[in-house]
Amino acid sequence: MKYLNKELAQEIVNRTMTIINWNINVMNEKGVIIASGDEDRVDSIHEGAVKVIETQTGFEIGVTEADKFHGVKAGINLPITFHEKVVGVIGITGAPEEIRNYGELVRMAAEMIIQQAFLMEEMQWDERLKEELVTMLLNGQEDFDSLYFDRARRLGMDLTIPRTVIIMAADDNAKVFKTIRAKLSTDDLYVVHQHYIILLKRIVLKNGVWNQAATRAELERWMSYLEKQEELAVKFSLGTYYSGLEGIRISYQEAVHSLKVGKKLDPDKNIYSSEDRKLPIFLSQAKEQGLDVKFGTYIERLKQQDKKGELLETLLMYVEENGDVNKVAARLFIHRNTLRYRLERINELTGKDPRKIKELVELYLSVLQNQLS
Image (tube, rainbow, N blue to C red):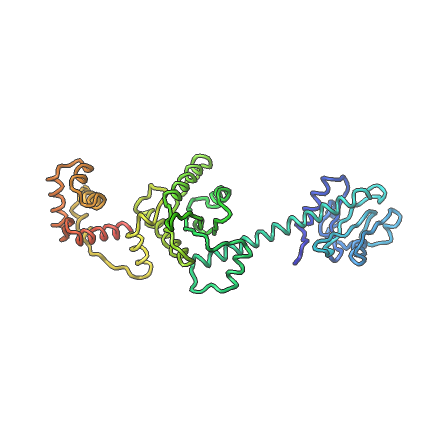
């Protein structure tokens, strides 16, 4: 692995030159100057650095000795070590007696910068690997081998923790993720998808049962914060909790389809739950898998004669109120006789009687297919 490149070397130069008012050079493991406060010296070979690499120790060049070497000026050159290996050389230009006291300080600063960069790169690599393992969970593989679990353990992923899938979709997903990330627990896992953010949220089970209301309340707090503090409009889709690794895949698929159907059926809402949309999710998944069963053209026939939309509104209210005619009439502000007439009219136009459970289901499925198409 190459620990020192031009970008990092230039960062070392810029940061160390704020410590001391002397020119700094950074040379790679071959003695080539790859960064300097004096741009004209970049890409030239520094013979003093070559000597440092050969001897693994510092090398001073006095003013009178500088002409004896190629590409050097008077100064101090010290090895940069990382993991007990010389990875480069840092040099301070100037009379050795004037800059000697700064040498160790500058060398330590350079090594600290490399250490920080290495840790950051390692963390980023771990994050990428973590996302890869999470993606495998979401896609659902039949068998996860021992290597998969070994990697998960090394990255601190406890796969026995109960989690459900939450999808967050916004115009600026990067900004949403930056905000939400600070609110996540160490056991929450995530993947930043092209169109949305996928979160595997840790949940609490009580007697084996998921308190969905608590999770939903947390999403509402997030949504409120994002809207008021960050001026971000976000839609959340919450999958159901299922146990086991296969449960993650199922929860994810439900969350995806819940978002899809939610945008069509309730575009004004910002939080969708798959628990509330089992039937439309089933239709959406069936269609995606090529099982697009048609439930007749009942609603198309109804809409042709229902110019004001009163019959469709009545049918949907009838479903929502579980066929309670008193509640339906009250919510529609109509007399029960008017409701009875509308139900008979629906039967006449569609050939399906909404007062019969089986036929009401067929009518409702026809409505959903029409809305989702």
